[in-house]
Length: 294
Image (cartoon, rainbow, N blue to C red; front, side, top):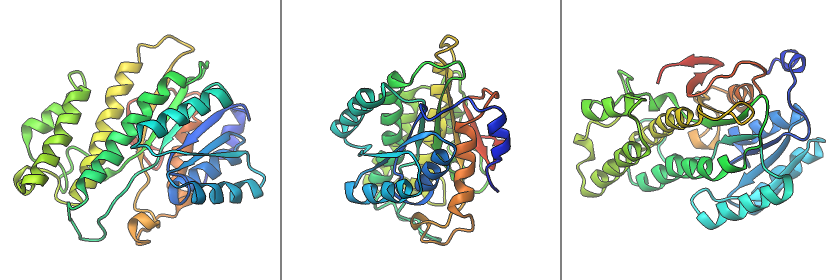
């Protein structure tokens, strides 16, 4: 599946002045999202925790004639986030698009170790939340609204028959979007991590497949709904639309190159959501450009 360029051109609201930030974009899906956005004429800021690999990735894109800049960013380090925000404000005056791609996974195939659960939850959920909270104040006013897109997973669906949360009380708390709060999501993740530490997590009613990764993405999905609800009250001209999407099982280092979706295909829905011309959707979950349920 490829971007439908002719559709975007007909309703092109962006320009080279449009600033998109893509986290964890030195390789894989993030790199391809940066590549496709820049190919549409957006100015892209590619971020990476490691400076050398990030600069090399940007060099590749720049050699292709694309307008891409680099800045180091560790989404778990408050000082790094603050330095990045200061630089974005000073260099561009803000941003228009945020793609939360940075994430980790330590399980492959049928593995389900929780040895790195702390790192997975902290990076995939708390790190993503850190970025959203830090950059919302820097998102520039626009008639079409600013855009936040988070890369997540179907593994994080609440009601998956194969991989959902079997603890009814926890599931109901996370399902009720009107009562959903940051505290509820944080407490759910922290409860899981406490059970990992004391060895009781297997009886906690958590997902059975890639438990820590699935929960981290479930939290991102829930936070997407929460922050979209909070931001919906913003006045016209200051709207921010927040969505998440599942790229599928992608052939990248994170899957041990075992996926069946190419990075180019995986990036498509992120770019589509970021550049939606006249369909203002928020708080939704997508896969292959179609809305799916949480």
